[in-house]
Length: 380
Ligand SMILES: [Fe+2]
Image 1 (cartoon, helix red, strand yellow):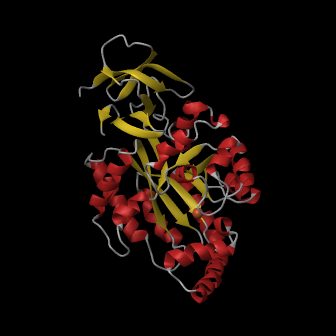
Image 2 (tube, rainbow, N blue to C red):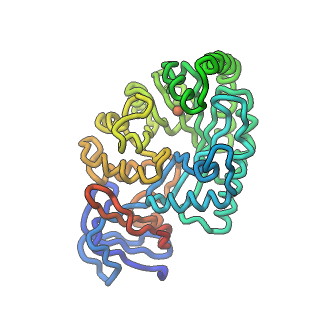
Image 3 (tube, rainbow, N blue to C red):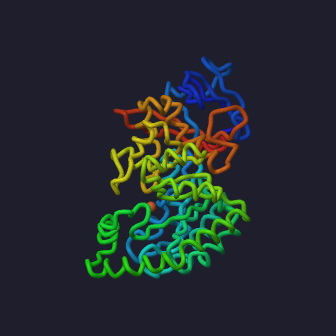
């Protein structure tokens, strides 16, 4: 395809409205958006939706390709490309790959393995072989001895654009109810009741010793490096006050409506999981994404552990009044996450922005991705 082209006969999903029209692209940018017939002949989209390429801030999915079985490590470069193919096939043109440091259960270290992935992402970007644009989202578990040391080498990685601070200690946030912690880790780690009880005591001790200082150290380092921060699993007003004090931009997965409300009104972007919308509730029994959407408190959807859930989740919320129709639902997965991460050049079908676009058709309410362009280049 040459550098300039026009997409016509499209149902264009602009930031505040949808209309039948056309979009002209030149040198990777959107140069014209109009209603009705295009002034020149173009590629006829047959009435399909044309939306901005999706922006994904939190996907764990790279790890699935890197460790396809427990203790089986796949070559990192190949894992990145397999992940990239799935991401672009889900309409995502900008993706923040979540890598984690700090262990939430035992003392095994993740840092070196995660660094391999970060290097593979950098190498793939350098060689221009990825179809989506990849950035890093480093997830830091606060309740452990070595998380600051483990996260430090990532601070000089130019792809690092987002850091979240998490606390999965039994009794905290997501696991305020310790029986939920037992249920989750008991299944995941195949541990006995006695092992779980001993781990609870140990995790609480480690938390008391390190978590507060770790948080302060990580926040300071990110502020110095100019990296955006996200809080995770906020449950109370105090958690939100702490996030505001620390200058955070995003509240990931608040567990209560109170925390979501306080975050949203304080100007943090409230991010929830799209699988939660698709499945009709949270797997951990906390407040649901749809509840927050209905209350007008949802700002961003993230695919979390299923890349294809992002578009499904957005289409699934277009009937929620407070969301603002299809245009509002698509903003949850495009413009809002782009702005939350400080990317001002994308996320909307608007003159001058990057031509990151996806052509979508609905079939039995299921959105089908038919074509994807990144910076005007056809990539799927
Ligand atoms: Fe969590």
